[in-house]
Image 1 (cartoon, rainbow, N blue to C red):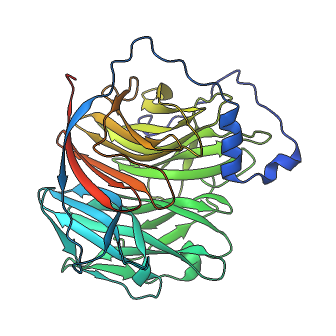
Image 2: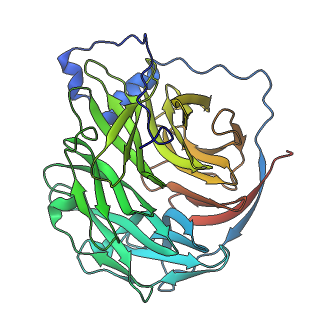
Length: 406
């Protein structure tokens, strides 16, 4: 598989905290809040140059049916096409799946969408990916007796229409379901990562027309070395790279983890250098073909990158304010990495020009609050950035170019 994709690295000499059995039953959110409350805050830099300014310009998306509030949840670009995915919400709060496309990133048109199932017609598309100008998406809608998301996938027919893929309920749901996270596209096909009761899981497809669930796979799933969780994935020349975290036995905090696979079915795990702080990689991109991941590092955010000898911890940035922090979006353009992260109250932008070592705050075009109905999405092409911000009352889409001299 090669060192550029995978290296098994553990940091020597790290002390591990032991916990009693009662702590095993903390929810993930409560556990994260407790851990972050006890982590020391990062030291401030002596001289803060202030945030980078950007020339942001707003672009408009036409509602597919001429009315309704646009809800955007993800952006993608490939093969000279841009895609935006989400839904249209009516005045009563009902939603219907929606996708837009553009040939220049400025003028957008709705993509025809055909849904066959009850929940599919109400789905919100939360992850979109494309290859060779062709798009696919993953969506969901909360429903049923237990209020769990009813997940479905979507593929693009030859006439350009996005069509819901029929799948059995237990492909994405059922008693073993936990969550479905992110969709990625690459030369080998399509990959979704998420989690089942057995730990990290994947769904694979050669054409996005039908996905096969891979759960309980050795190295990917939980085992006697720890409980695994996958957040994101990216395609490379050697196959797939997934990122997340692993909770080792007797610990109450995750260490960042990465997995590699040639086909999405067989996986190898690498536990990255960790500390006693809560750490996990939530998003990953390729910078000049090499992975850079971003996630939580104690009461702040941190980056990790893969080098010839394996994964190394790169620079940290930001800080946690309250609530549950997260990486809302991560994108790369012209070897620059832009992260949009939530401190638990609001989203902020951070840019790195050196594969994650140094980070500088970036001004966003509008306020971006955090909440169940809010979200951000991001994609980069040719030194420009496309940023979507949903503040819960409406979504705005922006094109920006950063001013490196500010």
